[in-house]
Length: 144
Image 1 (tube, rainbow, N blue to C red):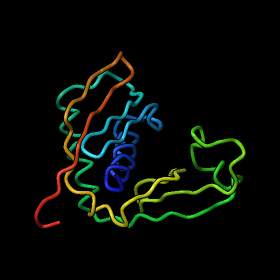
Image 2: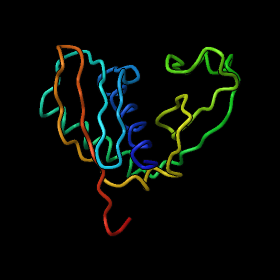
Image 3: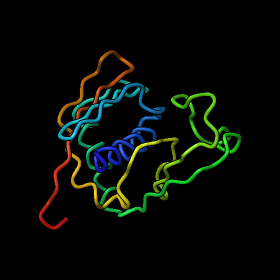
Image 4: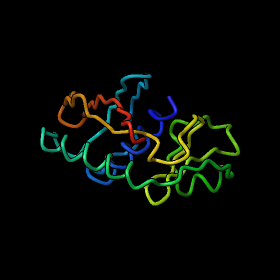
């Protein structure tokens, strides 16, 4: 789950960069497959799916360090979406993937993005005109 959780953060950053998506609205992380629902600014198609998969894999290969730190709630409110964090939480645990993403998260993560393996977009379904469900898995190469 460590690798899958890290992949979800990378996917979320890619969706924000490519489609202006805020943090995913629903997530299910599994050991073999996962899914995330993202608000999008337009319906997505197969070409978008290929672009998402390529962008996530490029960030994985970039071998970004992944770090967790604690910051005050006041500092977090200035720069991080806290919509999924209890209102009484302080300090806030922040997971940062260098040059890519920063979010409040209590989960466990890989130490570097290169540990994630290859991101495989299994399917992409528009739930309505403004919400896409992305199902994905991870493959680990022999070289990893």
